[in-house]
Amino acid sequence: MLKKTALRLGLSGTVIGRLTAVAALIASVSAYAAEPLRVAADPVPHAEILAYVQKIDPGLDLKVIEIPNGVNSNELLQHGDVDANYFQHRPYLLSQEKALGVKFTVAAEVHIEPLGVYSSKYKKLSQVPQNATVAVPNNETNLSRALYLLQDQGLITLKPGFSDPAKNQATPKDIASNPKNIKILEVESPQIPRSLPDVDLAVINGNYALEAGLDPAKDALGLEKAKGNPYANIVVTSEKLANDPRIKRLAKDLASPQVAQFITDKYHGSVLPVAAGKAS
Image (cartoon, rainbow, N blue to C red; front, side, top):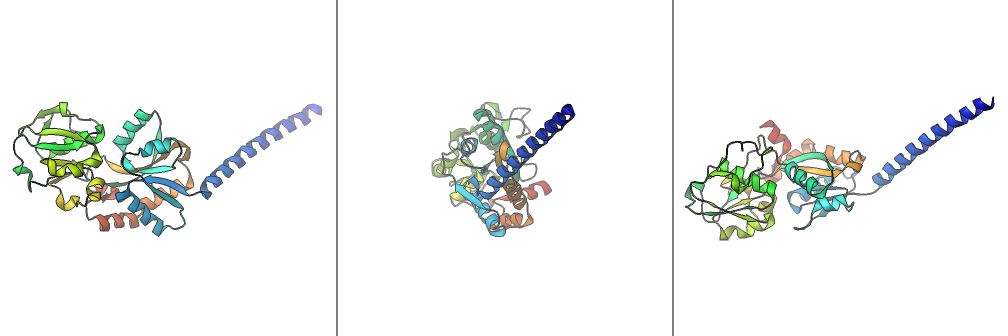
């Protein structure tokens, strides 16, 4: 009888322990859910899209933190200063995970900002002279992206094997043919719009083009295609918050037809909802 009683007590203690752990987990989730979801975002178009989400889903308590140039939103996420960020594409995220020694979680794919080639001196790429200078982003993922775009526009040819920008990162050393002897000038991405008057061509990220008052759909001499584009901008969170109900709700909102229509109507092809790229 004593042995049976002890056994029952042992089982009861195990069950109680598990129930306590479950209760603690629920309390933890509830505590998170009671707090605003802090999302670091670039001002344009990311913060604008999140502001629209706040309008269509006022029950989702978002705290959108617009990040100035030079602040690494992935470091903010790593240190718990924000709960998510929205500013980057997967190739850049992979390079950041390697650099920071951390693993993040992609919560949603939202939009594509087509990279464009711009000029304040020429109206057509065919007018670009010999020995022209082209400013390109200096971070490895967008540098590679810019070189693929220059290849697509017929200005350079990359070495054999560089056909998939999602798999093969290109550098200027991988240029096989450069008929006009174009000089590649690597510049910090946010600074490239300011350098436009000083160079013959500039390859500018969509968000920085918009911030500078450029209309990629109209002003770019060459623009990335949506079809097969691996550079969809994503919402990223920590592995700890991957299943947070606020993250799930935000992801669902961003995938909604209303948000896709907002992006289409507001940016007129300068920013494309991910659905457009998949359908192309």
